Image (cartoon, rainbow, N blue to C red):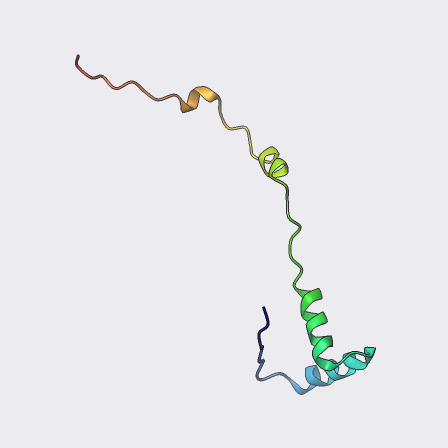
Length: 73
């Protein structure tokens, strides 16, 4: 999923820092991608087992039994 990102009104000091950071042997664009990737980590995915195990015990199976309505026969 390729996209373009335009960031306006960036302070000159930040622009200079980005240019200096690009001195790692990568292009400035590649350096910017790496900075964004590192700054915005995705949370680790949890297994269904872990999600279910983390659910609190809040009742019993009887809580799900339907109530019998008083219906005249």
